[in-house]
Length: 188
Image (cartoon, rainbow, N blue to C red):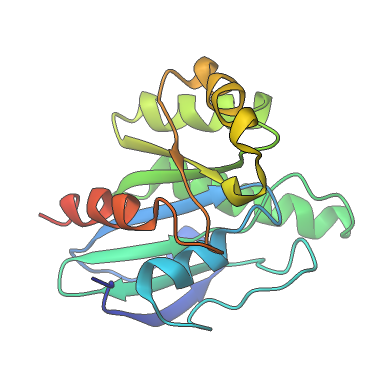
């Protein structure tokens, strides 16, 4: 099962967002954590969201329509310093505005590298979503890079979020179906 998705638009502010009745599920995480790759894996459409090995490539909010009632929002990554300060501030401002004020936002899929675990940025992001009463789904990406013996320790590192992560890998497909089902439930 794949998500029937198509690219709609890229926006740099809340005013640019489409006026529609779709529930939006945003994908957020550090630069290079795999947001665009995960979006492609969820939809089964290679190249739907542009991916890059260079951190910080996604600088706008990219919106994708999924079926009749859902949309995915691929958000810019955070925590990458090799860009002009003015651009970094604009990106941070537009993301904050979107996460705090977008009425269509129903859930946040927060991606965290499974080898790293959540830090202060992820805890702050989770608090914003919880304060709004929205659904928070936590995904531990790149789990294929963990040894079997490292998995339980990696999952334990997510305890401060009080949500067990879905272990995901776009390389071998682990966790993709589970995440897809959780997202599709939000469309109903």
